[in-house]
Length: 264
Image (tube, rainbow, N blue to C red; front, side, top):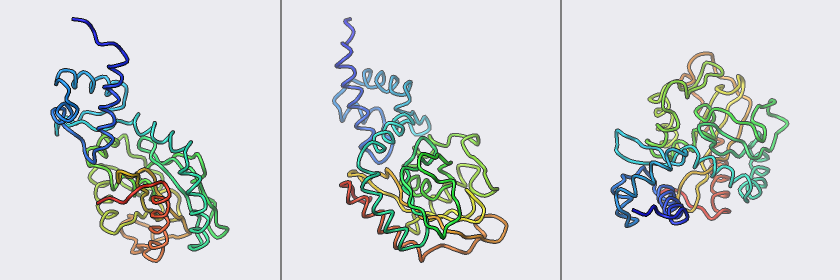
């Protein structure tokens, strides 16, 4: 049998990758083969190659395939070089002025939050969320707001075991079930909150930015000075509801500026 030429094989692999990126949840190999009119054997070969390179991940319990970490890294690199930062910066200026906090724009980089832009308020303590800094996504409000809108299988792929979780201040999730609890809270109220998980004495609120497929690609957030009583983060009664409208409006502005749309 003559082996398929590299270019057609590459084109087919990219087509599979595009299909995975367009779906809101992981997809079975049978569905991929059907939708792309590919032989099942070819589909499995392409998926195996994509997985080996980190662009796809197999979820054996569900018998489905989703995007891998390398796909997120490519997407983050694209966003860093494209208009997201430029259209987001004036929005951050307005948001910082309106809230009195330090506003920032971040994207997922694997299971970390990568900060692309920041507008500092003089009333906010010095922060570690500077441009180019990466922080654990499960601890940041920006990271939580993006993760909350990803398929459950994708979140599991990003946090496969206890080693994927980082502890900075004794607060924040240390297991996947605990993270899922936080993500459910985020979806229910429409914005994410972290209190003292990154730095003691500060809290952040964030909302997701979506692309044209309704997929979360970034988040807009605000950090303010705040300290709740010592103890688990869930013991803090503050929901920061007063900040939420301005932050959600800013996230919608960035979404609209890049031609995106909210989910649903």
